[in-house]
Picture (cartoon, rainbow, N blue to C red):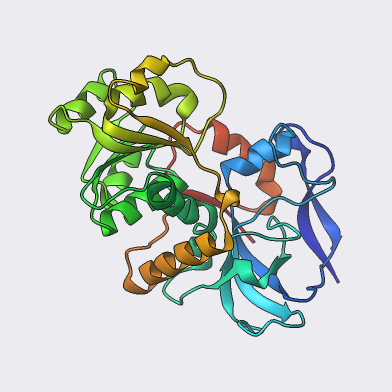
Length: 324
């Protein structure tokens, strides 16, 4: 049986993403499942990996994509948690998610509740697990603290706002468009600021009564990190979720208030970390506060365009997904 899948034969720009229609449907091995993919999330890390400059380099050729949602088509030996026909989402795939079918290890597959669409299911993986890890495992944030989500209208940003609000934080967010700002407010932020406006950093500082923010979840550290250090409260932490290049900072800015700059990498998570995160997130789906916001939708044919838009869009509005 053959399927359509996006293949990367060489590292490079978005144009190396080629749709092939003669790719064999993979077979699930022991403790794996085969999923008929209905939607797949498009994540910034996939654009970094595609260039060949990222720390994790897959063997060529490969199919990108980790966050799929779909239906179990077949199960491998030893799989007891799922059966054919189950609606599921993943946090990782083995054969790649930009495809009509993919295999995944059963321990990276989770049930998708009926109240969420496949497109929403494809927006859960990296965004929500990264948001949880950033807030609780890296920032060690405590309910009642002030959290600034710097770049809050994309996938990780919306996820962070929803989790932080549900868990009792005072949530500030930024976005670069009026539409993005409204989305951030509707998804958990108490206050929102336009990060394209001159003087917005001062406005955030004023909104804290001059005390600063306790935690900053930073999506574009190569632009914002120096300003972030001015915004932190005593003992504040800035968590680096995204960086697209270098930035110069003055280390002295961390000294007076004893602040910390902490990187986050979802794939450094232990098995226990994944279990803890999934317990919280699955509860959020049941109760209803975890409600992924889907942004622009693409067919697989438009994979190069999707990667182009992801890096160069004027302002994120939810999670970009392939609909298959």
